[in-house]
Length: 228
Image (spheres, one colour):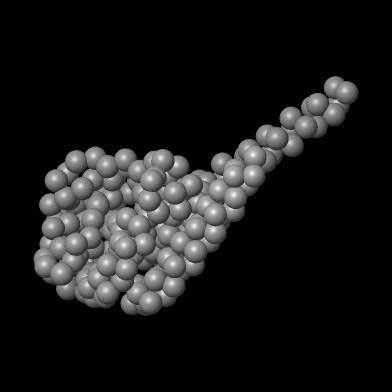
């Protein structure tokens, strides 16, 4: 009996160690966007803290949401591909809101620069700053821009330190998630190629599928309760 208990304890420790190492690997800052280890469909979304445009803390509790969330990570207002993506996403905005989704965007830009991403009067998104990398690392999206690329950016007039207010030179691999009210990731799109973004029609299809499944589960739950 003693041997069995010892073996069981050893097994538990091995499993726990593997989980910790996996989490550490995911939250690490990787050498390139191709090497990130993002959270995927079926995984539990993490809790995280970011700042809004007024520099106020916003705490996301994944399992205490009353509405599903469409969460998009983008590089920053200095990125033309990000700005184009934000503009394109407004074609899905009204339908997503009508389906009951919160629509949030997160970038590495410091709070006072977030407003520059909202210059388009047709955009009514909620945008948060993750200059501290709390959310970006928790979702496994963080990678560091190497010195050569950083110098090239500076040559283009893009100063990552000025944009984020930090010296980490870290960006997120662009990503979009649909997170259910139970905190589970129901859809994930991550592409290390920042020039290729999620089309609004694909997001809408995924959102509709989530809502149909959620409504179906609600009906089944109601029927079971009614029979008791």
